[in-house]
Image (cartoon, rainbow, N blue to C red; front, side, top):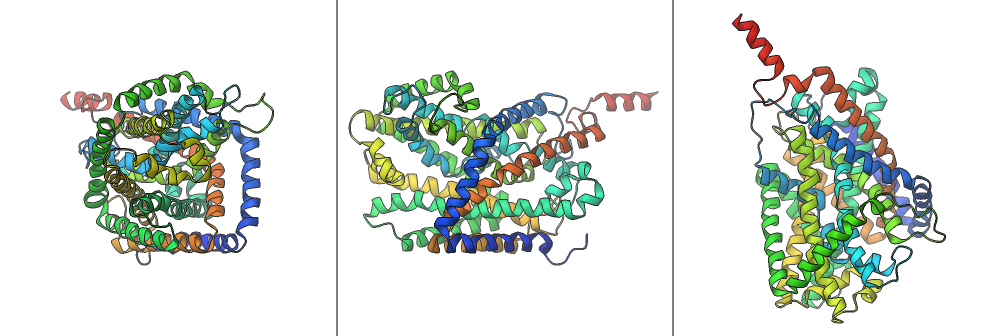
Length: 525
């Protein structure tokens, strides 16, 4: 492929033009476009709800198969080289990337959605519905969603670190299936444009929807109104942070922010346990875990098929959650692939399955437990508060702690850093994806990372100001359906590449592989 400049405009410009072409009419006709898109999305969910649920289950099975079969020991890179990141640093980055600031919102308030709209047979606001609410919140950040995030990664990582292909592209990973003609032609180009379209719209939506987590807490702390001006200030600070982090790269920026935030989040958790209702939270956490495992299969596969009327929150939201998670699968997998050099297939998959899950369950137990305690003691009418404004309930809950103002400040910082690490990882990945440099040897150009950050910010701010962000969120969710098929394509491609190379014999850390023993025996003879 002929390279010109630092960026491949053949895939970047079409994706950008399509985003602008979509965003303008969505902004001009926000209410009508939102109604139309929601209708399309609802129809897809109703027809294909069973498919989304089985998609999550199948990917967990695929993750376990790749991890604990002969493929698990395959090293992503030279078997003699050590990973660039320690396991703690590696896990911290995957946690920050996998969870983002969303865990701060769902951990605190997701239980209220189930308590207010419980499954059939439960009364709203009952102890059973409250307990199931926290268990369901844990389920959302469980094995299925992280399997969705990571299972494109084996193909991408093997292509980049073992095959040493210069372009970190979905199309290149699909070459064993597509063949050279399709990969270098329209099919490969379409796959790469779809990746950029999905990730750039998702990043703009994340920037737009993530800001309220900060602004509402800042508003409560400073006793000021939430305005677009406040949102603009928060966004500018946030953009400066994630642009600078992306500019520094994985080692100096993303890694340091991620590890620092894990320590800060841990200290915040200990503070809530000591200053808040620690004994109740620990008891509630234990009950939530018990309820989670008791209801895990029901959460995973329930479609409410025999019940009449509207679906419960558990059923409808699970399908939406998996559909929306699928839109982020390519980004998470490409980034995980980029930082996994020197790791084995098993280490990459199982770290992504276990580390974010563990932290999210702890966050949900502590943050959710605090809110439930304040509701049960009558201190705050949280189930009524969330009906009016969900985000405004968060600072009200935090303010009930001793040193409530400090708790809100720490919450803002943790959420801000989580948002920053999500978006700096995103801009870094997009820059690496569109760069014309050899990504098996180089970092993406710094100027390109800043350019990507600027484009995402402008799109998000314009849509926040003039409308159109909510429809774009639905468009982003709609992209989950084709990505399901791409995920299975990538899984098959990964297996095909490793089978062709017999990588379980030639690319493992064990120096005494059967092939090497055979060569050594021949040499000695």
